[in-house]
Length: 192
Ligand code: ATP
Image (cartoon, rainbow, N blue to C red):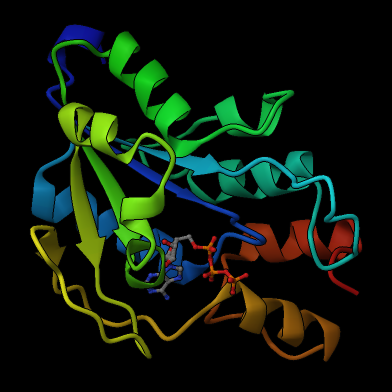
């Protein structure tokens, strides 16, 4: 799609360690509800203190994100944060995407747990001028939604923590991650 025809863009960041069906459902729900032309999945960079086996490398997390969005024409991966040599803030990513799409409306999609800390995000005030925050409900969380566009999405009771535990315990992952991501985890011996 030509950049000029992209009117509405979503940005959805996360560890994606690994990406699971909850993330994908949430992304698809946002695409539908907000009528997005494109949604970028942005895996965060690997914090220097995370060298444990529970936190997969940036290249593994990105590979799984790519696999998970390969069948969806509106889902794109964004490697800005993974490839950044310094700590990369959501604001930096937003700025770059806004520069690449100067005529598009941008929605920053966040889960309820992340929304709790929103006002302390780096450059929060500047971000308000560049995007609209969209806040997704998440099971187990209950918070107020002051001034935020809120989407009452169906609740997906999945987390990456649960997926990693299931990998470790050799339990079925069928309802939690896509088959391609499951194969990737197995082939690369992740989360053991
Ligand atoms: P972990 O269990 O390792 O903390 P996670 O499942 O929360 O991981 P993240 O990659 O940290 O996954 O999440 C990225 C974003 O997606 C966050 O804003 C989070 O709130 C949201 N999110 C993740 N899973 C769900 C879900 N099942 N329902 C709603 N929001 C979700």
